[in-house]
Image (cartoon, rainbow, N blue to C red; front, side, top):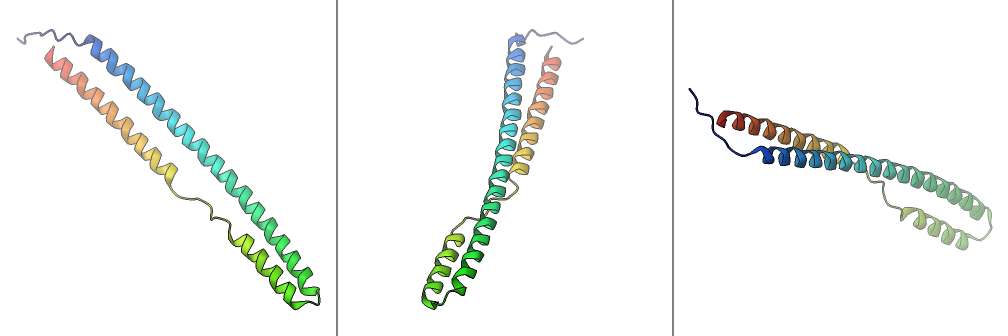
Length: 127
């Protein structure tokens, strides 16, 4: 027969579950915040693209107006200033940051679940 041992680990199981719940909530909220930031970045990129297209159309109109004028020297200066102002815009930020964070989160959640199950088997074995 197996001898039943008292381990006095009842409080540690509650603590383990409590910490697991806190970690799961923080993981879910982190993913939610990252998702919102990603959506905001996409909106900002869309606004930047629209502004760039508007600036390009304004540049084309300015270029047409300048080329119709009779002064060649002033038209070259105006075109170069318009081109330099539109070229200074940054490229949109893209990538797989959201996918990587989801994979990391799912991996951490799996590790926590497996460690909890292992701890349950160890406790049952020692009782």
